[in-house]
Length: 180
Image (cartoon, rainbow, N blue to C red; front, side):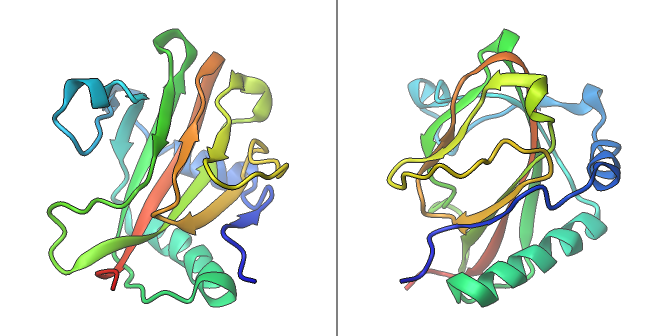
């Protein structure tokens, strides 16, 4: 049986994490939204984000995506992605309730196929803020700094409410031809 997600514990070192964090200008962070204009659905998410466009980050993540895809997922992929820095702040009720990453609207010929999430914060910097899958029970530690999680974009997951401090992560979605 094939695994449903791929985890690399503490894969990034502090130097790599700081290089990513150096790309983030705190003045450029803005309130995150979801794919719906419905105001009640917007309440599912409370976080600050910015988009990362540097090509070296995409290539860096692409290597992990290729590894996971070769070992587990075997889906048709392109090196096309969106990369987002996300910050969940306890003083703003930071969270992202159950959702999937597939955006069925506005994607001409492509769908998000694999999602990647990288834990940038040290686990002592915040409380709560657990990354969880809805239908997969696991005791896997996703909070260790530098940990990478890769999974099919259609899996429902969440980040529970951060109750103290700030949780920072880098997330990206890699595309391939429409699901068939």
